[in-house]
Image (cartoon, rainbow, N blue to C red; front, side, top):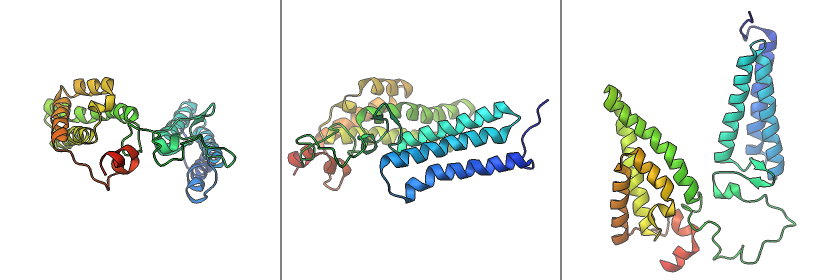
Length: 244
């Protein structure tokens, strides 16, 4: 029967420390050393690969634990990289949550197409504040809403932890009102055209999100709020022209 790894074992301790060092290599240099994206990407993924390998070796002879730790490191790194960096690049295409991170790697020799650098150019007309496209934000809203709705439903089932239900319900209510009023204020269609996600969220919340969103949308149509200091106003040139 295989023994479980322990930090009292020399090889486990050595590879555990090596795992931490590799993780530091993956995370710290891109934060403090400003280099080109390709260099940062190579360092990040090399460090991640090293950390996954060292975690596996630290778990020997429990290879199941080693595989689990390696997959966990890769999974968490990919998840974090998608939401915070431009490091996921497959066949020349960058996959990232934010618009800025999704742009092609800058190249000094590249020439921008006509109009790209113009003041009126808007690379994501439906984005929220120029940061996230509508389709990505609303798809993120599906599991997020489900998580908060689960907390609310859980309270009605076991009558425990009412603060979780209250917090989850408050987030859903505020999100519905904020998104509805904001979309209408700036002249966007309902859910900025993301009908599938809107319908799924409606089902998850038993229509509560939809009702609140549509009420807020109606209010935003009649009493819009358009602040020049907002990210939405500054991100989209058409807003600046339409609402000077």
